[in-house]
Each structure stands twice: as C-alpha cells, then as structure tokens.
Image (cartoon, rainbow, N blue to C red; front, side):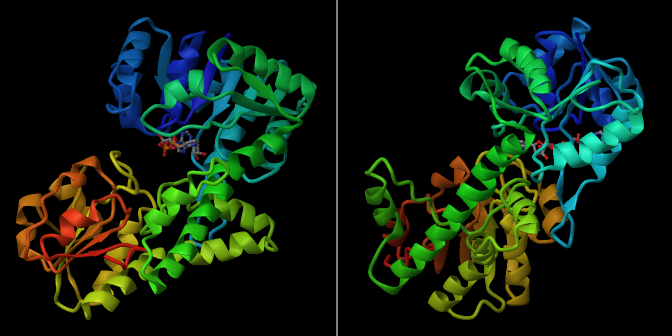
Length: 425
Ligand SMILES: NC(=O)c1ccc[n+]([C@@H]2O[C@H](COP(=O)([O-])OP(=O)(O)OC[C@H]3O[C@@H](n4cnc5c(N)ncnc54)[C@H](O)[C@@H]3O)[C@@H](O)[C@H]2O)c1
C-alpha cells in the first residue's frame, strides 16, 4: 500500500513516520526548504520525540520520499492523508485555501478504490461538503462508492505526537459511509496499539475533535477567569480554591491564564461559533478569553499604577511552556497593550534567539541576568526555566501569567506578586 501525506508540519511529519512503519510514503509540502531537509534525512522538528531518528532511518531505507510535486504524490499513492493547516482569517472565518488546493490536486489524481483521510481539524460537515465535493467534482467519482473518504482527528500535542497517535489515545474514525470507515480502520489498526473507534459518521468525528480543545477546554478557561474575579474581590487565592475543588474526581477547574494561544485553542471555537451563533456560552467565553491579556495589564495597573516609561520585561513568547511555538501567542497582545500604555518593553524566551525575538515583537531583548534593570516582570509563558529564576529585589512586581511560580519566594523579597485570581498575596 502506498501512502501520501500532504502537509509536513508539527503533526504531518510525525504522521509520515508512523505511516512509513507500514508502507511507502510520498510526503508532500509546498515548503521547498523543508522538503530538501527531509530528503536528506534531517528533521525540521529536532525536538519532536522519535521523529529525528525515525525520519533518518526511513529516508535511508527509501520508505519516505519527499516532494513539492503534489500531483506526483497524489498520483502515485492509494491512501492520501490531508494534514495541512486550517486557521481563521482576519474576520475570524475559516480559511480553507490550503484544504481546497490539496483537495483539488488529490481530486485530479483520484482512482477507484483510493482512500482519502482528512486529519486537519475542520468545522462540522467540512469533510463531506468541502473536501468530498471537490474530490467528486475533480475526479467524477462518487465518495463512499468509487473512492473512500474519512475524517480521522489527531488527538495530540507536540512533542509526543508519535506516542499519542500510536499508543496513548484510540484513533477515532468517522466515514462518509460505513465502507469508508472500515477501509480506514484496517489501516489504523496496524499503527494504533490502543485501538480504533469507528463513530457514526465524519460529522461526529469532527465534533469529537472540536469538543475537546475547542469547546470543553475553552469554556473552562473562561470559567476559571470568572471564578478568579470572585477571588480578586475577597481574600481568596484561586489556586487554593482550584486544588481543593479538584480533590473530588468529577471536577476539573482549570488554571487562570494571561491568554490563550497556539493555532488550536483560539481558532476552533470560531469554527463552531460561525456555524452556531446562538451558542451563548461559547459567545461569552470568547469575550472573556480574548480579554484576558487586557485584564492582566489592568490588574497590574490597579496594583502598581501607571505604566508610562516603566521598564517591563515580558518573559516568554511561546504560547505554552517548554515549546517553541508563538502562533496566536498572547504575548503579542500583551506587548501591544504595553506599547499603548507607554511602557518600555523588553522580551526574553530561552527557545528563541535575540534576533528572532526582536524581529517578531519589535521589543528589546533582555537577558535573565539583566532583570535588575527592570521595574517589573510579566512571566507570560510557563517555561520550566522560569521556575528557577531568582528575581532581583528591586522589582516592583512580578506578574505570574500562568500561576506557576511560588508567590512566597517572590513576596519574601519585598516584590509584589500578581496573578489573575491571586491578588491576596
Ligand atoms: N499542532 C498541533 O498541536 C495539532 C494537534 C492536533 C491536530 N492538529 C491539526 O493539524 C493541522 C496541521 O497542524 P500542524 O501543526 O502540523 O501545522 P504546521 O503549520 O506545523 O504545518 C503545516 C504544513 O503544511 C504545509 N502546507 C501549507 N499549505 C499547503 C498546501 N497547500 N499544500 C501542501 N502543504 C501545505 C506547510 O508548508 C507546513 O509545512 C492543524 O490545522 C490541526 O488541525 C494540530
């Protein structure tokens, strides 16, 4: 069986390695540099577990061939996996351009009995109505009858994608019909030790994916922010409330945060909201969550006063700890607000070079050992390294954007500790 994978990013590249364990893979991407690197057996994801060594091995064994020629990949494979990005545009509408262009290529080269697997997170109905319709129009074949089409979401996060997709979580599959799902099940049973679950249809599988990170996690972050507001009005520490509430196994309060980033959590709620404008809980959650960076700066201002001409170091560009990923990072919004306040902004992140940080944020780079020159510090990312920081005494405040620092270690130096829902310190 010959596979092709379209989109060799954070998920597509590990997926390529997974499929190479059971067959030959033509891996296709529009990024020439990436393709050249992979063809030399070098991983563009050096920190992704298992990928660098597996990629090298499979390229040497000629199990993975990488190309920018998408037509070639589509033509010379029987199973085609789509894992290109789908994000939102300026108007918060899904931007299907990559999905459409890949579907057109596959459609032009589709043969009877081929299987198309969509793994990109999609709005409900998009597998059947966007990808399926394009494939049928371009190939003149019928989905579910002449060729097979399924949605197979990837329930994972870097840097442990291979483990997640082969042993940590069951593979969910939803087909445009039963036969499609059965075809895909036969393949995934060979790669997923945890098992394969076939659900009613592709729409069900799409909603399963969206319900996790796009809805459950998203509205719970908003709930945390609302409970945090109560804490701020009394002498209550949100984290103490959270930890003790969560002693009961049915409850899982989330931590409050400075903002939501990455190309999943801030994006998927809009896939649902665009289709279901009456979803009031989601509408309010979007309002609450998108205001988190501003709320954070307001808390600082309320506590230490005007930020004009204050030297403030923002620690962390990544949207979450211990990874290099800044798409939709709340740090960008924090910097924008600080600029409006007239603050002098400095930036640090151990995962980025000085040049990368300065180019991306237009703020000045600061080293960890230069923090004594600052008036205050905003720790925006929960990088492990920041836990070990010894903050200099002269700082007026440390804002703990992810509530992961020890407040006592900061307050005992006479520095004000600030965090959402934790004004009691
Ligand atoms: N990153 C995650 O944590 C995660 C987790 C689960 C699911 N997903 C899903 O995986 C999808 C891809 O995410 P990612 O993190 O791998 O993205 P990514 O941005 O890391 O990589 C996307 C790749 O697709 C390529 N690409 C873009 N347009 C293309 C086109 N028209 N033809 C061929 N290649 C094209 C890009 O060059 C890039 O290499 C997401 O949209 C999401 O739905 C992501």
